[in-house]
Length: 148
Image (cartoon, rainbow, N blue to C red; front, side, top):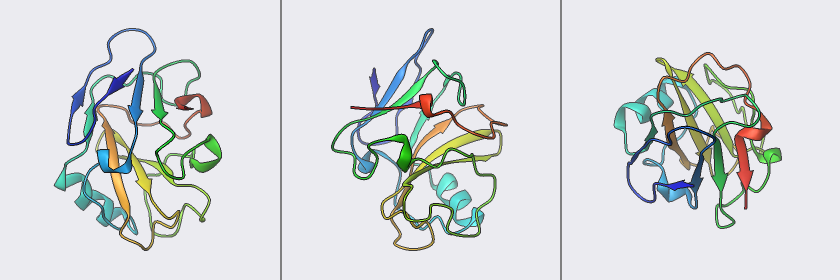
């Protein structure tokens, strides 16, 4: 289990299945409103989030995983994760029931948390991690996530 903690970290898991644990939304980058692709791209440019250099098997069962601790609000099962990977955002993609989504741009995929399940308002989105070099995945697997 790799835990970056607060602040921007670079994590490399190595061989085998690795778990990257998040215990709080505060472990991500600065909060913003994920209402559009332009807003997300601006948050990407601002930085402040973790970089995972070797996340393996996004969208594939039994590979690297994200692990969310009990104190992480609104993310207790895959029911609260939007599994289709987004490449553009111009509407409320979360529908009030999902609080975590992925965004693919520039040859990388970003894991983004939204505190109220509505990416259009609240200025409570934050990028948790950049998956370096992970691109072209259309749907994540429920096995990409574990919850404790």
